Each structure stands twice: as C-alpha cells, then as structure tokens.
Image (tube, rainbow, N blue to C red; front, side, top):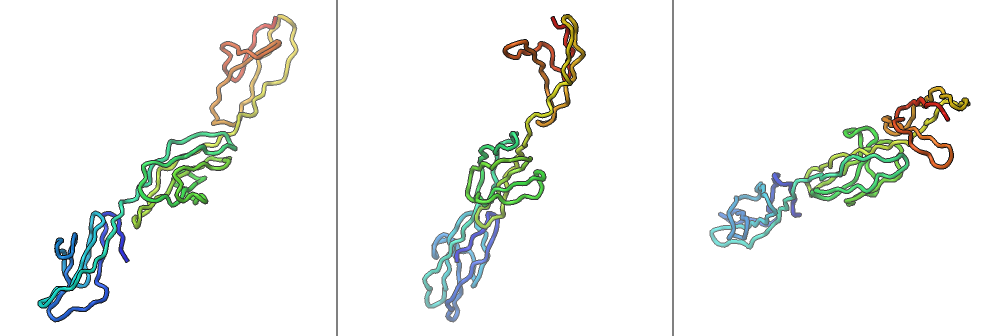
Length: 231
C-alpha cells in the first residue's frame, strides 16, 4: 500500500518480495528509476519528503540489474481548522442563523457544540460531516460551536469556537397600581418593576396617551417617573 504522511513527517518504505543474487544489493532512487537521485541502499529506507514523491528500487549486481518497483509516498498538508464568524445573540427559541466555515485545510469531520464554555466538553452534532455551513435547531440556552477538520493522516485541528447567546424576551415590565387624582393635581411618583430577560442591561422610555397612539415623554428615561400635574 502507498503510505501517507503529514508534512514534516517520515515513513519507512521496504522491498516486498524478490531476492538478491550474489554480489547484488537493493538501491533506491527518487525522481526516476536509476535516472533520479540515489537516496540509499538496503531492503528498507526511511524517507521524509516535503511533497508527494514516487520512489524506485531495484536490485543491482555485477551481472545485471532488475527492473524497478515503485511506491508513492503522499504528503498531506497540515490540518487547519479554519475560521467561524464572530459570536452572536439570538432570542431564545430561535436558531443559530447560518454559520459558515472558511479558511480550513482538510476534510470536515464534524461540527461540535458545548453548553459549558469555549473550552468545555464538546459533543458531536449529528449529520454534519463535510458541511461548510450549518444552522442549528431552536436554542434555549447559550451554546458554543466549533468545527473539527483533518487533512489526510495529519492530526485533527479545530476552528475557533463561536458563542451563540440565547436571551429571553423582556418580562416583568410593570408599573405600580393605578391612581385616581383630582384634575390639576400631580399623581404620586410612578414606580417601575425591575424587568427580567434580555442581557440584564435595560433602557427605559415612558410613554403616555389620552386617546389614540402612545407618545414618548421627553426626558422620561428612568425606571421610575414622576409626572407633573394632570390638566
């Protein structure tokens, strides 16, 4: 069988079968049978090519030389995991959006996900072999995603992990109980509840209406609001 190595590696190649006559020896060549560079003698040699190379061997003796046998050593480039786009934030229950791998070298073995952290325990995502792009199903918690790539016999490599943050919608957005006031009087200050959901960083905008559409109240951008007199 033709051996394969990773760039920077080495392998032994050996004569299979055959026999030597008196005074003969096995001689190895690279680049051509006897016309290429002589690289060694003996039934087995170690080679470390930097590119895919065919090697030749024959028995050479005082009386005659045999025809050459050949073997090709395939050199695979190092695996490169490639790059996934930056982290993203979605609403809980949505999918990840399209994730695309670029700049990789080798074959895509699988996509993986972790619910722990970027360096936590990853699990294979089913049916993702060979896919350069992937979209998850509905997500309800944070997840980290990466891709595992392998070039030939070289060690596996992983892409950068990306974090997909799942945020729940804003909830608990209430105001303290209603009030009845006399015309021309100012209501007591209005207290807003502390919302939940999102990323925990909230901005506020109070609105009002008598009839029709709601309108923003200029400058009323805090959690609580003290209205003026109602006319």
